Length: 128
Image 1 (cartoon, one colour):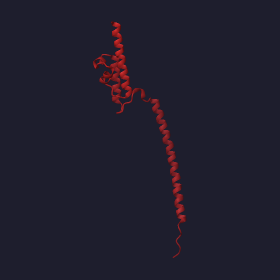
Image 2 (cartoon, one colour):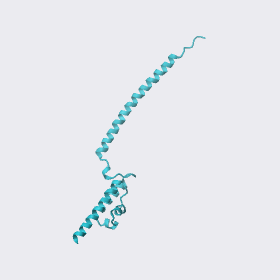
Image 3 (tube, helix red, strand yellow):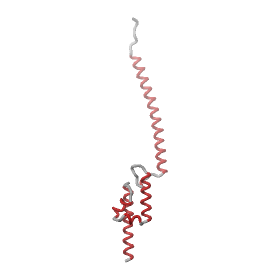
Image 4 (cartoon, one colour):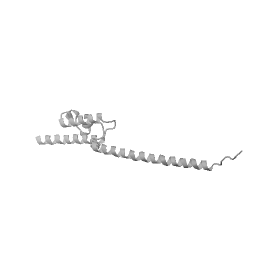
């Protein structure tokens, strides 16, 4: 009988952990209620499980600090990744700035050539 109770307890915990993982992966708001419902457990039971309670509270606090569009923990970018993305964006900005400078020079030359061509094609006014 003790073994059956232990097995039932572990099965219930596994369902709660799975529900918590799925909710986190979906980016849904994490509350005791949103974990209890799909896991088929009561909120009060979740409060009695110190590790589950701590994880729910931790994830909920992270989500509250995060932006309006929460990102699951597994999908959050690391500091190193963000730094690489910033460096790549800065390099792209440098390339685009140089390309813009070259294009402006080409445009200025083309406009100058056009102005010169128009000036040369205009007949010079003769004496009156």
